[in-house]
Length: 280
Length: 269
Image (cartoon, rainbow over all chains, first blue to last red; front, side, top):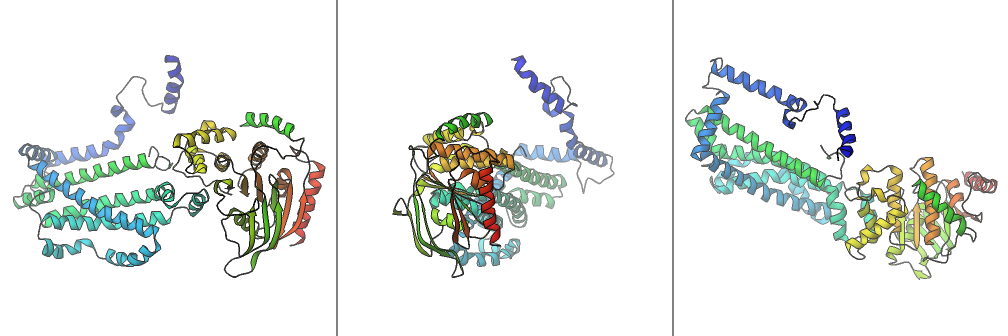
């Protein structure tokens, strides 16, 4: 066994000469630590500036204060409740808006009639900034869940619709002709040629949609809500709890990052055939 | 690949005594009667063509760009509707012969999201179970010498290998008529010669009728039993090539024939 492992080992050692021979955990590998140097330095400087009084903690809490605020919010359970509420809103809005966007994108990409009928209308509506509808939405739905769902769904709809449509239109017509010549019926053509061909573009829409989802949710929760992360931040502002405000902002950032990483993972699984996404 | 094609050359020399028309395998004859094709009421691209290609013949169609040779191929394959005239395959009107007719395009046209073996299995359509299709696809890949690449993505293959996968896909359903639309045009010279040998060998094994559209006269002379020169949508020259196979590149008789065809093509400039 040692024999067969030898060439592989030798090759990897040649490729990465900096790597020490001793078994070291992957996260301790210096080349993996380099990207984290700058953020660590910033946080350290921030902490020093806060605790030496260089920056007033009334405006910018020190990192340790934020951690402490997070800890106490987690212990009272307030954090989890708000996080869960925000997550459900984001998910519901995304599923509804994304689902409708995908459906319209597919329909308009596949059927000329459907496209003629609805595309112009949708493109016109697209030019309305969806956040400008907030006053109207509050009038319609109050500050209920309906309002948030509507806004998130509307925001998510367009990137997914536009990218799905674009993806289907840009499928290589030569491949479609090949499918026809090789006797595929419309169904097979869709599942084996059109949809996989449109998938990279649909994923682009998915990622844009996720970005808009968080943005819309933050705005909607900040303006009108009685639960959720945005509500938590606004409450904290009332009581001048700067650390909680910063905590909420950081959690939003973290959620955005998690959503993006999940999409990347999904992309890498679904688009493994595409050299651009492999080990990317 | 080199090993398998060297082996196959042996078999070629054996069968080549009787000029390349094996008894086994199925083949379609193609008959065109006053075939005409014009696009959107413009000048006809094909003008009243009368032509008969016996079953099992290897016909090469050469001509300048825009002479209608690709259109002729697409008509025979049923990818275009004739404006007038008839096409019959084995004496029948050419509807629904499905997997009997296959085409190899100038580009490989492989599905980038399907493994090589599944790309070949596309040629089998809905025949049999998925496992059976894959099994047959592997056999076809073996025939073009790409068994080790069966589970790779097409993106990892070279241009010549992709075109070989396309050939396997065209042949996996054992077609009776194979149309080749300049399939080797984009390959480098050496790969092209290897591919020509491969096509020649497989055709002799399987015995299908082959129609090759090309602008490479040398390729036509190397492969075909019969060469048609198309000019302005009509046959300008129709020659039989009865040189024994495998044909040696640089053979003086073949070179003379190549020169004659080139003269014909250049004369109409």
